[in-house]
Image 1 (cartoon, helix red, strand yellow):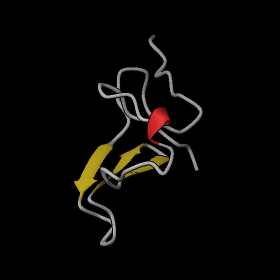
Image 2 (cartoon, rainbow, N blue to C red):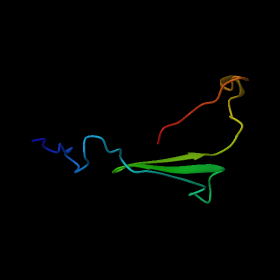
Image 3 (cartoon, rainbow, N blue to C red):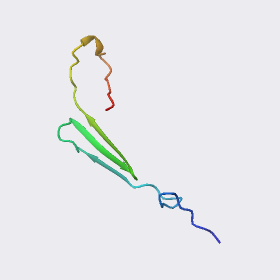
Image 4 (cartoon, one colour):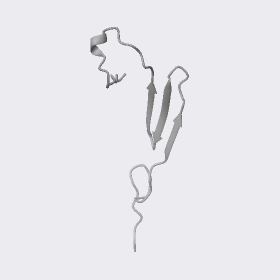
Length: 68
């Protein structure tokens, strides 16, 4: 007699969460994406490149990433 094992979100032990990826979701961004994995949602946007006002802060081979 085998019992079915379910996760707290109702999925079976061998079931993966649903994955959905959309690109171009923000009009004012140069690039954007929405990633949905189960009940988790991530929204990412890329704007630029933009020149820094303080040129000495701009390394030539790197970018600055800001979390908002």
